[in-house]
Amino acid sequence: MTAPTVKGRTRFITLADLDGRSRAARNARDIAAAMTADLGGEQNLTEAQRQLIRRAATLGSLIEDFEARFLAGAQLDDLPKYLSAITTQRHVLSLLGLERRARDARPDIQKFLAAMPDKARSAT
Image (cartoon, rainbow, N blue to C red; front, side):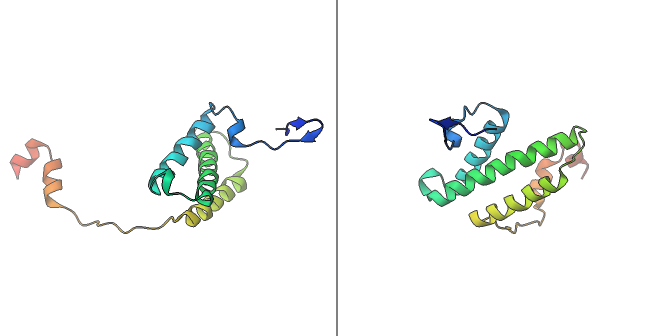
């Protein structure tokens, strides 16, 4: 992609300059919206967090594209780029507060019994 010029000078473009209808743009926008919600909504974000969310979402969209192509049978010739994107996204997400959260993995007998089909429940 060549940068546009105005009166012979290079003009920077931003995401706002893009039309936003491509699958990649929609996917990145959806990822960014989910991350924004996870962090408490737009009103609770600093500009730095907004910037990091845009970077993480763009990387997420790129990573998903790599993965979909690979799973569809395409040859992944750019494996180092894929792995680099994953590593970079992980760093960006850690700056946003990505954290490992412990969850209660103990079985809940009531939920287990409720999920059983009626026939199996009556046999017990």
